[in-house]
Image (cartoon, rainbow, N blue to C red; front, side, top):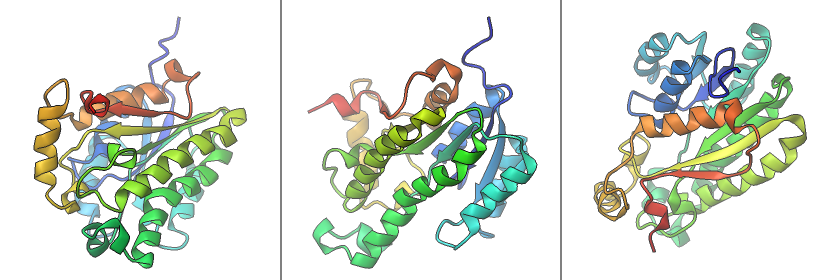
Length: 257
């Protein structure tokens, strides 16, 4: 019997690697380890030197820029995939952004413009990715995004990103319902706090890390490899009967009252 957890023969797009501490990199590393072929994006020319060596290490077949705020860039990525690949099996959306002034302000004080930008980059871009990916997923596929516990419960200093992540998790469910008949599964992964570049913008994040390590039943922080192992399973045929869920990988932190 074939190994249902192997990713051999599968092709996937990774959006969100910033450096070797990125959750997206931990996921990409596991996808590759399990046999998948990858396409990888970087944000801009400033980010490219940090991402290009990782793409080389991962034997990425395609590498290109993708800033979802720039008109046409995201669609351009999928246009290139359509030209170079015969199919697409999975996509990972691991991007989030909020203007610093809005992120550090109480929710009631965040600006309309800042909130709109955070929703567009962190949530609506996942919908756009699915729209472009679906026609390429001729044999079905999997869409993954990355959330955080602060979208369900109030986490101090997480501020406006809490409502944004709540919207992302809700979108995940509706996308799963929309795409299920086409054999496309949709999930969110919700890691415990990790020292990533994106997280560094959260005020007093070191305190959140310390509190999570003390409060989680397993009494330690998770790693990007923990996220990668879960992501690889969800993309595999072993998870083919699952869709529309948010999976916590946080040492049990989310069960604590």
